[in-house]
Image (tube, rainbow, N blue to C red; front, side, top):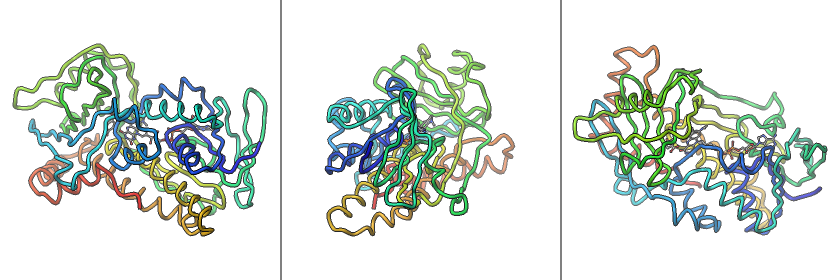
Length: 391
Ligand code: RFL
Ligand code: PHB
């Protein structure tokens, strides 16, 4: 098998890249280790930045998002039983975000890719990437019990945090920067309308809580829990009681409860692998970087990476210049580190570390006080949340 761009992974990064290349008349093959149902059901992100929405529209992949997605012009910060709304368009010159689940983005992109006859192979696991430093890198993979090789001009590793593409970068040029947090998120889906029309991020002495949504009838919510917590240890009523406590306010706001349909725990990690390219092998999305979900940045960063790669390859085709391709890693990393900084700041401002002292509590409250009373601080949050520009 031979193709121009071999793509490992059919998460949002790999699927969108295949779509962008298809639109530019460049052929690609996507290899995905899991089956289609698994990829389409994996519960993850819920927030699309303005730039991601724009990219999906320009790629012709936004028809259902524009019908079913819920545009959001702000978030609420809750602390000290108080509520403060951050108005995105007013602070950022008109930018906002969209609530549309990652599962739905993936379903839409898979349908488009298969309709276009684009090669997308499920249950095809990449085993290794070879020849990164040559003009013909290849992917050794296993499909339906048989080993095969995909020969490429370029390989893009969109294979997530546990992928194999990263191993194509030799150890002596790889650098890893990371931080783990002593807590995780217990996430639930519940068949009950959202209790508030925008997302609520709450700082509480008992820990962080987030109220989100998937649709007008489905609530998504998260609770900070100690690292290593087993979701099965939390009873449904216990989860609602804890959300109630952490989201409490002095006004008449109430939490709507309903049947919980899914429960899982996500660890929290910040991670960056540098560089994001070695020879003709490129890394994109979670394969190169992880952020804690507090800033809602992971999927949006993945989108930024593949847009950067696709633009660079199109420029090479059209002008013969490989300047953008050469700059791929540096261009992406600048945006990645802004998102790492933002996600870290949101995480440390809103979560309570197990060893936190009264001093740390007061600093968190002072930060929140600053954001809710000083326009430059509030603008900084709004700009970070709605997203850093692509170029
Ligand atoms: P993915 O989605 O992990 O996809 C990688 C794909 O590669 C496949 N794969 C392989 N295929 C072939 N051969 C191999 N050897 C392979 N190894 C792996 C995998 O099966 C998979 O299909 O990475 P991608 O495309 O880079 O996308 C990244 C996003 O999924 C991730 O950053 C976000 O989900 C993070 N995230 C959020 N991001 C946001 O922008 N906004 C949010 O609101 C948000 N909330 C979240 C999140 C992540 C969460 N979890 C569970 C980590 C909330 C949570 C709880
Ligand atoms: C979600 O709805 O899953 C979600 C929303 C905002 C975040 C993280 C996750 O910051």
